[in-house]
Image (cartoon, rainbow, N blue to C red; front, side, top):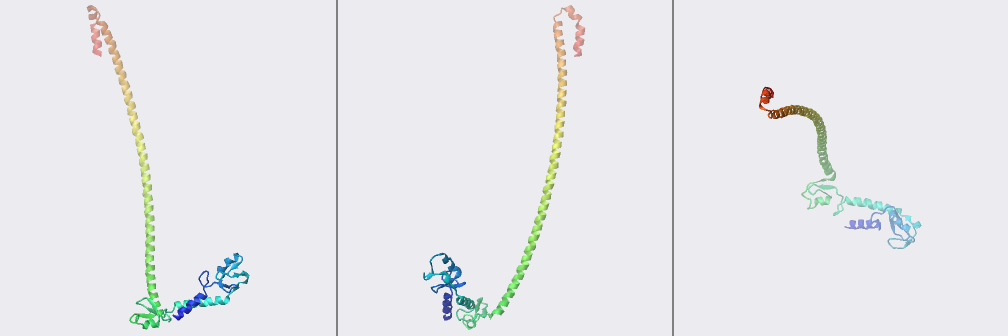
Length: 252
């Protein structure tokens, strides 16, 4: 606990009051307070400038790089990294790995009741074992990745092949329907021409037939008119012309 308290006090001493992080390129002001150069620089634009911590007037030209504090910061960082590798409970190096709890422990933890019956191994040995597991997992993952890549390649090739076949079928259908439309158009034109010829022949025959009928009607009208006139003749004149009337009637 004392070590933890000392580390905390040291951390407080090497922490910038502005950014609340380790000093970076620390400078000392006229009042004796220290700040990161990048944190205090914006205050230079103000006149007169004041210390952010005690509000005492300061002159930027009097700022001095605090190299000693910068060295202490580096030492504090190293101590903090080392502290991270020490057991918080016993302040001993974490040289062992508890396989049951999957946690780093120290030699004192190993002898404690909490880990007494657990499987414990040196950190390096446990790390090598886990590296083996990682390598095995990596190998399996790489094989799985290769399978997926192969499947992806096959799928893309199959998709491209399907697209090519589909395009070929589409072009084939377009050509077939183009030929079918051409055939139907030609057939339509042929049938329309045939119908037109039939219509023209029908009209011609109808006109000829009507002409014959008109001629016959005209002849009948002439005979009827003639007979109407003959009917008015006296008996002797009617009988004299009877033979010619029969011949003309039978000719109809």
